[in-house]
Length: 343
Image 1: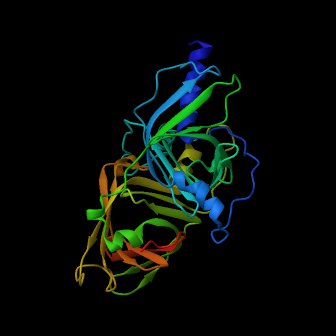
Image 2: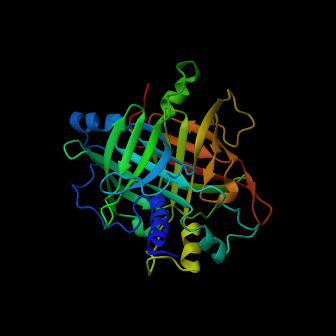
């Protein structure tokens, strides 16, 4: 195998992470959710919305295309007006885990085939850069990093360029803006739902009222875009960076066990007097149409979530499930709104 071909393979392995092997970029600290101003909001507005990954290109310093464009990745990037964002990218042809999986070997085989990270973002229009301040990432080595990208807008496309390689070659990720939902389909519930949320608590109880222990997330985001697309990012505490540049099989397994993510369109179903819902305050249900998921077996499936929605919080309940002891169990995820409710 030629050195050139080895290099191409290495680049393709890193591209989906949008930051593989990057050192943190020195930047100003991310703004707090309450420390907003008109100038920062104005800088963010061109990014706001959901974008679908169109192509990945690798070019020389002179702009020459070095390899055929990659066009088979399925991915979204969602930017919220309040300065929050999430990225999800998935390679095609991922094999579902075995029924009792994933095993360590299965997790290692899937390493690099799915990318997910979330956090804040800031824009420097003078430098022409957007920086993703990574709060959580599927790859534990990425958490806490700042990923700086040179950006270019062209009609309904956003081109993001990570730092150049040692040979000054450039990787260009081209994203296509997803249009907003038709106004005729947007309800008051949609308008209230659009935005970014951070998980506040997880509770679990049986249908006959007994509380059950549950592990909390260290951090988690859910983003609903006006285009009708969403992404979910769930990170457990106690995650450790890999000992080497690549994970061992056991490290890869730990990665999948401590991070969940999926993305796709969503639909809202308002149900007045929802007598079949698992909670008396439920206003209906949201269906997350998962076109992609960190768990490859969940890609292409729907996830129903009964909801309660206010100006400050979103409560989601999956349908009851039977646990190992035969009890019907309800899990409740309470999310705090990060961005202002739209009315």
